[in-house]
Amino acid sequence: MKLRGLDAIMKPLFVLLGLSVLLAGLASLWTPGPRGPESTPEPSLNALLYSDLGADGFVEVVEDRPSRFPADHGAHPEYRGELWTLFGQLTDASGGRYDFQLGITRLALAAESPPRASAWAANAVYRGRLTLIRADAPGVQSAARLTRAAAGLAGADAQLRSVWIEDWSLSLSDGEPDRPRMRLVAGGEGPALSLDLVAGKSPVAFADLGLLGRDIGASGLHAYLLPRMAAAGTLTLDGEPRSVEGQVWLDHAWGMLPTGRSRVGLNRFAIQLDRDRELVCLQLRREDGTGTPIPACALILADGQVQSFRRREIRLEAVEHWLSPRSGARYPVAWRLSIPILELELELIPLARNQEADDRVRLWSGAVQAEGRLGGEAIAGHGRIDTTAEVPARSGI
Image 1 (cartoon, one colour):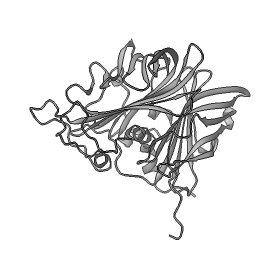
Image 2: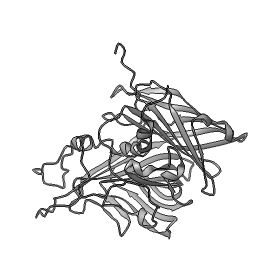
Image 3: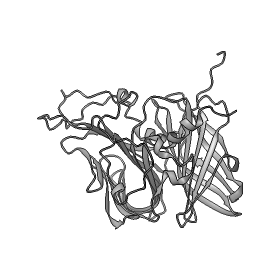
Image 4: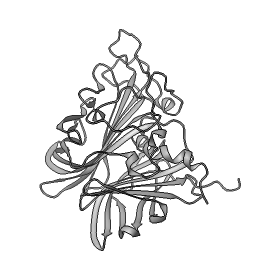
């Protein structure tokens, strides 16, 4: 059975899922932190995210455009929303392994700020979320930031090509436009990171992955990824700093934020493999489980070239599900993937089952290990799976 209206639905969804993962947690009511005046009322972000904010005064994405580096590494305040997502695997000197994800989302409330005397007046809010899984310890550690762009607490500078939210920041330091160097800092209580990042490959535009058609501009978003950045720096856990190094993946997107809810579910896979290769896969499905899921994959080779594969060339199936005790939502968390034309077979295994990003919007964003074979030889890797919840079809209707 085919899904109806696919052309209208497929193009925007894979980028919007990345946005939704970082927006998890914004659905709660924003209240002023201890640095702001307690009497200042703030809007319900749940109402903002699931209503039509409109585009008055903002630049709209109506078609694809070539990437512009180094400018696109910086912020794009002329657009309604923007996100930066980084994830990767780090190791310390003793062989300890740590998988992390850090995201910062900017949501503009108005294109221009009305003149107001208060230093706390703001027309944008910023959300940050850091999760960390330690290989030799159960559970997921996390930290979060949520604040307004006021009094210097949060902001994004297009000229300096940086974004910050309190004591967290991501900034471009130097390097070639296509091989940038960046600095990532996420301090404070809980897990903390301070990493220098060096791109090992040129940026890849989402449109160039060839996953769901090239007209990605119709989604209302521009986006690119840096799929392999060498990382070196310090990870602090329980007050103890340790030197780490590893590989990090960066997604950067800007445009209109998603509003409303969809009946279409989406699974996204982003895996860093041995042999300096990366795999991106998407699977579109009906949220109620009916119909035939539609997969698409792209393999980024060591030289940056992209090979794309469509549904008849891919075998993708969930082999394990996890039921959230908080929301009751059911998520596919372990997968088997094969692309016969590549002689690629992978098992994708979650490092922890309980990696629900938010129980209100029903999103699971989890670190995974990859094990399998490519061209008859063993291959391994690590990355993330983002998936919306599966909702059983209601009977008797």
